[in-house]
Picture 1 (cartoon, helix red, strand yellow):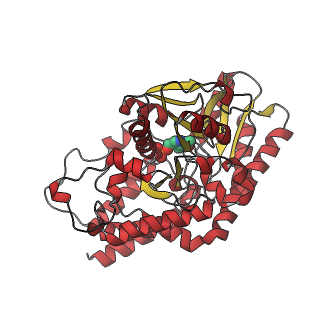
Picture 2 (cartoon, protein in one colour):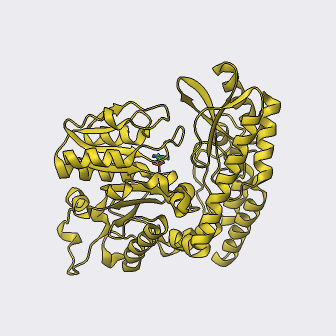
Picture 3 (tube, helix red, strand yellow):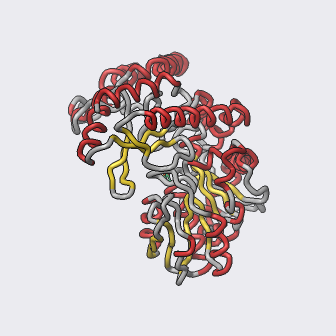
Length: 430
Ligand SMILES: *Cc1c(COP(=O)(O)O)cnc(C)c1O
């Protein structure tokens, strides 16, 4: 078989998958170890045709997949890999460039800088910022906090009690201590409670993971400026909403940040993985990460993006982001974000109107936090049963010490009929 024929079969598989993913059980209906048991324990001695891989993908692996591309995937932060992004991934793998120096992949380096400038324009961020791509928000935050530590020598990372666990992990890796600040009734960091003693950085979150609450970034920026502390903004999920002017209220103060992370692989229709890290202080990132051994020395007077983060070898991630931004344009992105928020609003209105159910936190974007009146155990039971049904997949959190269900809309394949099916399944299960 040739690359062309196998490739056509793989593309056909991808197209068929996307057509039927809405009919598959969203959460994998398997027990731990079940998939591995069905696979040979040792590799083949002789090579096999590629069609065998496709066959086993269908027959063995697919039943063990939780379908993130399903229109009824509502857990965590739902995302979607759009068609232009999927195709660009194929092309990036074909080129297989490793962009650690400018000369090892000039187009990759320059396109990455350009697409981050484009994305900054789309989201309304300051023009002068330097942006590059990391794999995940976890890595972006490690990079930002390493730069902060380098810049001011502090030993503490300050964030709210609702900051993402990646902040704790980054601090642990960097040998920094974490200081958690209590939140107000809207689950936002209370700026008057900020204690910046020995602080290297404050991480403010726009769109927290549990409930998508928004920290008062402008007030935090004031405190950081007074104390010379680095301000890192984690907008991994909600930052994509800034493509629409009506959500820019949540951006207030972000223009004064030292660094900002937004995950294009979360709500900007770009396949995993593509985390956008901007900084107003690129020289501090370089100070934290630049390291040029003799074998990487070149004569060009240009920046290498490996000088801005932990990894040396870098994939051509900007190709898929570029493809998405070009194929949708500002208007296409806005329409998709607005539709997700409209569906979340609609779902929220159904919950509010139904006796015996309640909305548990203010909804700012496309995440609805809700619960059935009754005990935590009853709500956990509802979650377990609807997820096991395969009809939809939701996740949970704790808000004000109560078990709360989360329904997050982020796929551009989700339609009104999907949230109607989800609501029907939840009501009949309860
Ligand atoms: C999802 C999320 C993260 C972690 O993102 P990864 O890319 O998986 O590391 C961090 N912060 C917030 C607010 C998030 O929503």
